[in-house]
Image 1 (cartoon, rainbow, N blue to C red):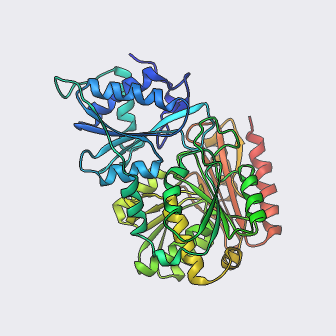
Image 2: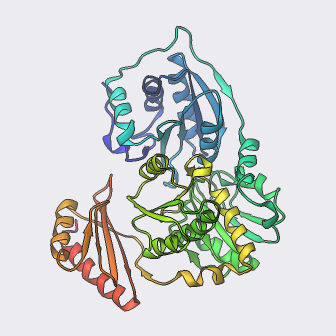
Image 3: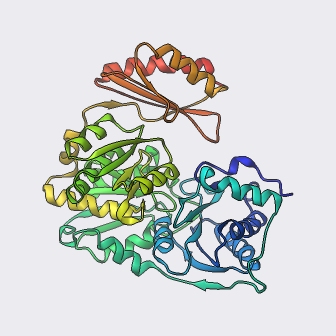
Length: 453
């Protein structure tokens, strides 16, 4: 039986260090396991620019084809392009994207998806795939080997994105786009050529060593070059993408970071004009202003636990028009309930053009509350800590356990949730005043530190 580090099977995907935790042998056997799990005659496969991705693809494809199944090879692609290919093609309804998203260069992994099931995580198939792998319990679907079929969906992807926007509203902007040496430039280059606006690219060349910075738009230290360039070029806004380009973060024309919950509000308000009374999903770390503004726009606000698999699953089940996470993932029903940062950018340009305001002016009214940002702590007993905080705040707050512990009053709230894979807890706090935020932050940190490793 194959020995697999269980920690690489995460809530939403498979991810680990190459070659210690994920390597060519693992990829080869995973290919065989995916054939048994999916029972498809073809599997669509894309990969990002990481230095290990090509070798993992070769091994994964070998395992798939030895079981008599064809590989539809997308070559280098972003995750949104992979999702488009999976949900729009007529050859198969199952696929895998080789990527470790925003993780450092030594990581790689696999995002698995199915047209019917959506994104596959531990609760809807990944655990079963893990068991097949461990037992090496494979089955061939044909007597002869499968073949590799190369396909390019780039032009069709761009056509889909432009079908969801008003091209006449996309002119006269200057945009700085930090591709972070990831996959964003692959799709954004073509889009930039079809709009009457200037996009200046930072680090467009795909490079799995990430020579300039880690491609993670929620880490402020990765945005320094983008902020400098926006200010120097007097641009209207700046955008930054993660490695596989399924997340996008924004800075305004002054170089100030625009938090993802503000982007959720702007996009929800716009989409609710098209779909009056629609449902909008947001993760529980988001400002309570998100709920207020969705209601104000005539929508139905729904709170979700953190994680793309959970969000996509619920959106598909309830036909939710839009979803967003504080980690800069944004999901559209009109784009197969998946992320599409290219569409996010174009929709924000539409909104700015309609409002005839600068980005900073547009979002000024959306800064009502004060937030801590996500603070991580290494603790020895996550469950005991949550139990302790629940007891301490039980009489003073309204509590919920959708994802960790959330405690709310009319003046402030906090959420403390455990990491799925590390001995970490993640704290988010929001308050009506900066003074109350400071007070509650110090109060909670003091308690949490008693459980520190």
